[in-house]
Length: 86
Image 1 (tube, rainbow, N blue to C red):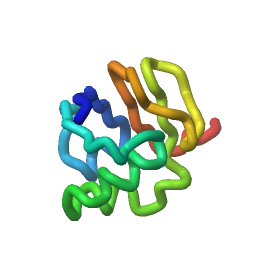
Image 2: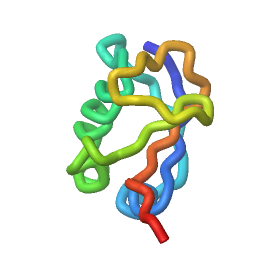
Image 3: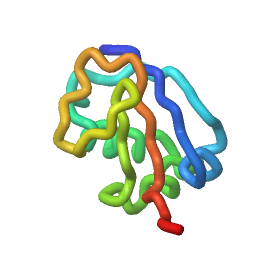
């Protein structure tokens, strides 16, 4: 198991109910997409926040990545809702 610091922003944070946490991830969580799928199993608040996981943006060590990006070695993973234009 690997430990990773997760940071949540905007309505993802509001729905989960916390701004950040450190989690132990099982070895089956290899990509950013795997992480999102795993988080949805942690409770109703995660499921609600990540219901449409294909729109969630992921940043590993402050760099935006695709959902198929490996997360090995990540110190910090941030989850964002889609950005709205203005």
